[in-house]
Image 1 (cartoon, rainbow, N blue to C red):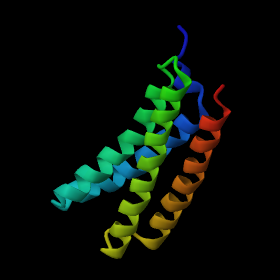
Image 2 (image 1 turned 90 degrees about the vertical axis):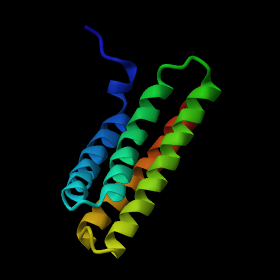
Image 3 (image 1 turned 90 degrees about the horizontal axis):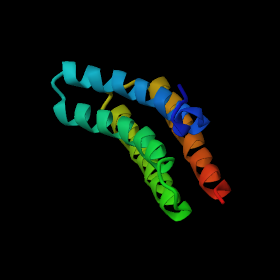
Length: 118
């Protein structure tokens, strides 16, 4: 059985790993009855990898790039959300730094991949 094309993309694999960390945070927010934070962090965690995934199912290069732009924007949204969580003392500074760094690197890699499409 062959894989979907997105499963071989390093940016998708990294987005999934980041999503798992975000889900852990979201689950803790849910347990603390911080519903809005939980929903936001779960949603942004799924959106990055979902948009990368969707970009591979499109033939037109410009449409592929559009979904990759969405994924990049979602990585910025995730970074903003984790900054807010740290400021509210809902995550540690080390967790914020780890996620922030990974999201920053991922957003650059998403852009590089989009630029490489021909």
